[in-house]
Amino acid sequence: MRINRSLRLGIGAIALTLAATTAACGGGSDKSALDNAKDGKLTVGIKFDQPGLGLRNKDGSYSGFDVEVAKYVAGKLGVKPENITFKESPSGQRETLIENGQVDYIVATYSINDARKQKVDFAGPYYVAGQALLVKADNSGINGPDDLKGKKVCSVKGSTPAQNIEKNYPATQLQTNDTYSLCLEGLQAGSYDAVTTDDIILAGYAAQSAGTFKVVGKPFTTENYGIGLKKGDKELRDKVNDAIEAMIADGSWKKAFDSTVGVSGYQAPTPPTVNRY
Ligand code: GLU
Image (cartoon, rainbow, N blue to C red):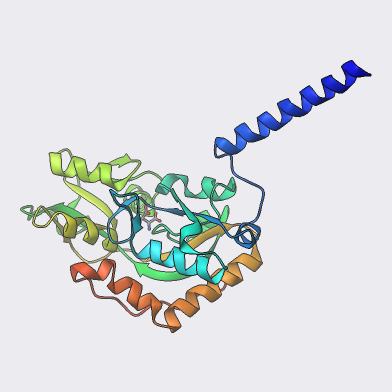
C-alpha cells in the first residue's frame, strides 16, 4: 500500500513537471482566445522591428499602428493593455504560432490570402497596403519591379512580396532573411540592390534612416491586412470584426494611424470595409 501510494505520487509529480516544462517552453495552450480574454489576459503576435507599425522600443515598450489595433481589439474583448503579452511574430512563423496556440491573435502587417486561409482565419481587413521597393537614396536605376532583372533583392521568408518576386519576376536574384531589419542591414552594407515589401513598412524604414534610403515606384500589389486568428473560431472572428468596425467608426483608427505611421508625414488613407467571408 505504502509503496503504491508513493509511486503514484511520484508519477503525479513527474506529470506535473512535464506539464510545467511544456508551458515554460511556450508550447502554447488549448485555451481559446476568448477563454484567455475571460481570464483577463491575451498574447498577441506583432512585429518587433517595423517602425510605425510594430516596434519593440529600447525601453521594452511597444509602439506602432498594429500595436494600437491590437490594444483596441483587446479592449473590446475586455482585456486591459497592460495585460497583453506581445510576442514577436516573424512573417514565416505566423500561421504556426496561431495553429499551436502560442498567440491568441496576430496583428503584424499580415496579408489575407487563400493559401494562408487554409491554416488560419482572418478578421479585417483593417488596412490596405501594396508592395513597393526600397533602395539607397542615390540609386536612380531602380524605379519599379521591371528594373529588377539580375538585381539582388532582399525580402522575408514566407512573405507575400517574396512569393510575388519568385513567381512573377523570376529574373530577379531574390535573397530571403527572417526579418526585414536584416534586409535593411544588407541594403546599407551594399549586399543588396533593393529591399521589397509593403509600401507602408518601407516608408517606416525610410523615415527612420532620413536620407539613406528611399521608397521608389508605385505599389504593384494589393495587400489586405487582416488579424490572424485560430481557424474555425467564428465567435472570435465576429467579435474581432466588430472591434475593427468600431475602431474605424469611432475615430480611433484615424487617431491611431496619425500618431504612429502618420508622424513621419504619411497620410492616412480611407479605411477599408471589413469583409466577413
Ligand atoms: N503583408 C505582407 C505579408 O503578409 C508583407 C509584410 C510582412 O511580411 O509582414 O507577407
